[in-house]
Image (tube, rainbow, N blue to C red; front, side, top):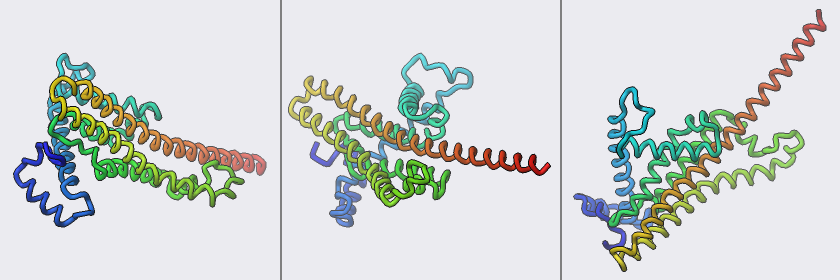
Amino acid sequence: MPPGKSWLSYIPGYADLNTYVENTFHGVMGGHAIIQHLAAAIFVILFLTVLALLARGQVTGNDDILPDGRFSAKTIVEIVMNFVLTVMQFTMPYKTAIRHFPVLGTLGFFILFSNLLGLIPGFLPPTENWNTTVACALVVFFYYNGYALMKLGAGHFAHMANPLGESWSWVLAPLFLPIEVISHCIRPFSLSVRLLCNIAGDHMIMAVFISIFPLALPLPFLGLGLFVSCLQAFVFLLLSSVYIAEVEDIIAHHDHAHEHEHHEEKSHASGAQAAAH
C-alpha cells in the first residue's frame, strides 16, 4: 500500500477531506498524515465502543466474578482491565488505583489497541503520529496537575517551591521552583516522544520486511511488534501512574501535617482550659 495510506483511505469522502486539510493546514498539522491517523484513531474508538457494548451485554447477574469458558468480548475487556490495574498497583494502593482508573483505563485501552492496529497489514497505528501521542500525554499532564490543584490549591505550587517541607528550605525556593516547573513540563514531551518513536520504528521495520518477504519471514517480527505494542502501553501507564502516585503522596503528607497541627492546637486548648480551672 502507498506510503501514508491505509484501508481507511478508501472510505467515501476521505479524499475530499484529505484535500481540504492539505490546502487549509498545509505545514501546520502534517497534511494527509494527520487525517490518516485521525481516521485510525476514530476507527480504534469505534472498535472499543463496540467491544465495550458487547462485553456489557455479556455481563450477567450472578457469575460476573467468574471468567467465561470461551474467548469473548468480556474476556478481552477483563484481561486489559486487569493489565491496567496491575500496572497502576505498582505505584499506588488498590483503592487509589480504582479512583484514577477511569482516566488511565481509558488511555490504556486506547493506546494498547492503537499500537496493535499497526500489526494488521494495511493499517497505520494512530500512536505513530505526533499529534496522537502528544494528546495522550497532555491528558495525563492536565489530569494529575488538575487533581493536585483541586486537592491542594496553591499548596501544589508551594510544594514545588519547597519539596523538602522544611522552614529553612524556603531559602532554596528560587532554585527549586523553576527546576520543578521544567521537570513537570518535560513529562508530556518525554511520554509522547517515547511512545511515538518506539511504535513508528517498530511499524517501519515490520513494513519493510513484509514488503520484501510477505509470507513466513515476517511472523517473528509480528511477534516482536506484539511485544513492543504491549510494552509501550505498559511504560506509558506506569509513568503516568508514577506521576499520579506522587501527587497522592503529597496530598497524604499535607493531610497528615494538617491533622498533626489540629491535634496540637486541640491539645494546647485543652491544656489552657485545664490550667484555667
